[in-house]
Image (cartoon, rainbow, N blue to C red; front, side, top):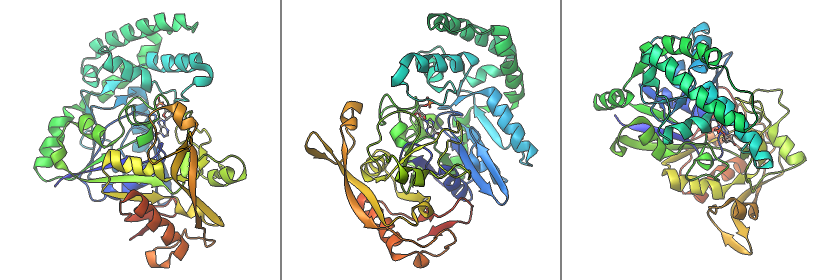
Length: 428
Ligand code: IMP
């Protein structure tokens, strides 16, 4: 049985957690391949709301093994905290349920301090990172001086590597005028977490290839989104990993021959958190309406940072691009219920930049900032669709909106979500 890759088609926060939860039901293994605890997936099961940052949502399905792949950057302290929280909710967190790649990289307290200092130094050009130390951890990885998860197997070696990392960071922090970290104190809690994570360490590429060979279906659960990809996103307003389909293969260590499905997830409108261009952003009443008040956990406020998200009309330029970069075989649309009650809905078909029409995002932020969306108007619908279960019961205007997106991206839409609960989905 082959692998399915699940990725975000926009700027993250597309509702991948609940789609992963659906696809996990058809999988034996669920694996994260990029990023770290900058991600936040919310999954609702009955009365319970689970907020996951590092552990794949497959953990909520008994019998599934979850993998933290080599492409990830892992904060051991936050991972232990998340595992303890899941265990307290009755989720089995034994080493049969979770395996951690010995090749994944470790986020240290130094990385977190450096993330904050670097954002401050950028001033009004700040990326708006999640301040989880993601960028500095990948910087050490590609600079060939990172600490890998496998080093946690030898607690003394791990502690020494941590002290070195903190001492090196202190020199940089001093240049930024930031208080240095006390290496012993900052590292202590990380060393304790490392000792607890030792039984979970494994060569996950070998493990995944063995499982694929013996017929297991593997779900590669993406975090963030295509427009945050370090190569394909709105550089430099991106994360430091490859959250796109290609990243799944390098981030897990198996070949493309195993992949038979690439599922994109897009919200039915656009949101973005942090800095960077967003051509269809709406300010004022329409944007506020899409965002919600924040009273409900599914309103547009970050799962990881609580920041209000920037909201706007659906951008088909972005979706078309994401379909191309990732090779989507299907596209799931989420939060369609939020669009109920708008008289008119708009979709950006193209951008106009310096008098020229462009169908794909330009590669520079400067050009994107000059982009004016070329909109198409579609009729809205007034009915509450949040309890509809059958596609035929959706208003005609809702079905037309979905069909139009399929045509614009040339990808079929097999499922839409109309609310936060597991069963608030409509299949086509
Ligand atoms: P970093 O990944 O913390 O370095 O943040 C870099 C950019 O990616 C910032 O604009 C963040 O807001 C954004 N970002 C990172 N992770 C997520 C996510 O899971 N959802 C949405 N945006 C994210």
